[in-house]
Image (tube, rainbow, N blue to C red; front, side, top):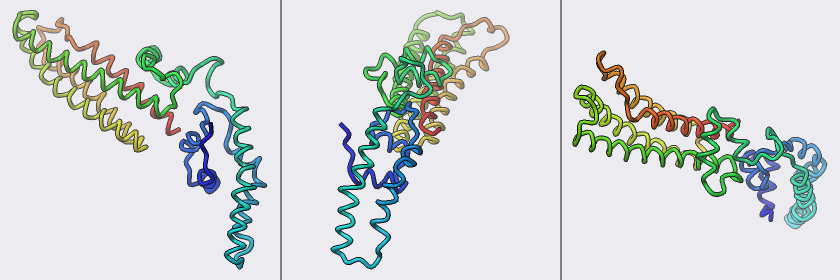
Length: 263
């Protein structure tokens, strides 16, 4: 069940393994309250013993050094591993109410909880996903909706050119806005696709920058319509207002979940 190697444990002890990677290797749920500092304190004797086998006898022969490493691997490290597995058995959720799944716990950190639950909850396995997986799902959901919105923009442009669904003045402005929005959403899709790559590389600040840029693209789409309207057309309704708002909420949730990986 726990596919942990001696090398993994050595990386943990030496500090070369980050917290997120450590949680992944140990299969520790991200919302656990069990402090790793407590674990290291409890096993300080074994950690010291493991280090002592390497440094207390600098003039050892190669045979003696090999013997010391064998002792380190087959006696000390297994004890640490067993204690770590016991820790997992007593691990309790953190910052979640009793019965919360991982998705609900993550969505509580967003500004748009219901949107988070409904949009991510429809993805199979999301309720048991690690925060990084949830962040990936959130970005993918945002990208999918951006593509759907772009297709809708093209449909509106086509129908606007073929009929008089808007009054004469508004039709001119809306058509111009739709062309601008098509460019904005195309750029938003590129930003989100790049953010997915950055997430995979652990570049969380870059993810923040790119997803924020995608949100700005939707805002520019909406603002462009307001700027192009003349004083006589203030009562006109832009057909993408609801799409822009929902897309911004999806991106906002993706940002909030990504921040869980940093703090």
